[in-house]
Length: 126
Picture 1 (spheres, rainbow, N blue to C red):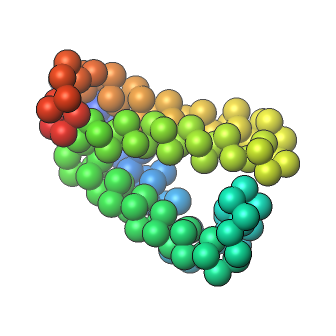
Picture 2: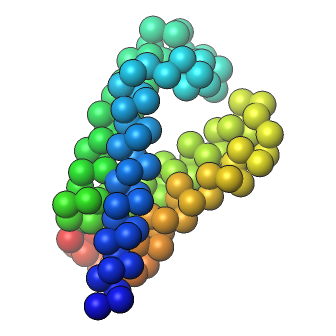
Picture 3: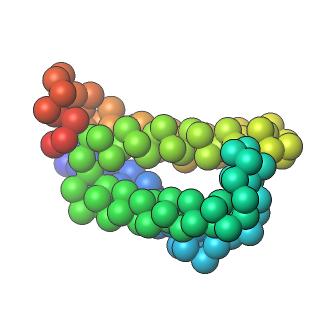
């Protein structure tokens, strides 16, 4: 019973994080568009389009993790959560902006480990 309860707490937490970020991205959060432009050299219009698609993907990830946490989506959430936390010091924000976002990748990693690390390639899609 405790395992299922912990899974649900983590599913809701991770889904909330990705849903919130997705909505910010769909709204065209200027700071994020600027960061994408700064890191990639994209013009602002291309960076805005990239952020829009990131928002769509974030919302898809949130829904999958809430409805059925498929391992490959959790792995993506770990990687993307780590990267988006790391972006902060890369664009000149304090290192503590990275540290305070460790839960962004730690929560999906905890859920992935709780569900069980896949033993083969097919299990990534279950």
